[in-house]
Length: 158
Image (tube, rainbow, N blue to C red; front, side):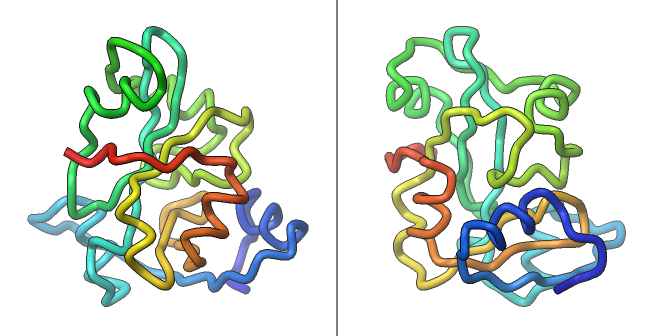
């Protein structure tokens, strides 16, 4: 295991879920942070997921999509049974999840928020999500992520 376990790593260990921790370093790049992480790990950006905190009709929801794509706020709102969706600001996201922006993991959040994961993640045998801090990613099976987080699967990519 990598130095300095996180709540996400500890949660998966207690749950008996198989995973691999990957450490990485990213400097200043001309691409998005997620794409830089995918390049550092030498994995396609479609397999690396970003965890976004969204307010759907004022309720916090977590949307999980590949870094290679975009989240459709309209599709997410519909999947959550709401009408309007907007990104939560960084401070709210950190307060709700207990993780720092850029290191928000869908696993082991301070407050268990409803999660919706894009259906496309099932196209891969393993996917990558933040381990709960910058510099660490977790590689695990998509179904393990879905089961562990209690996520709903829906088409939410834009």
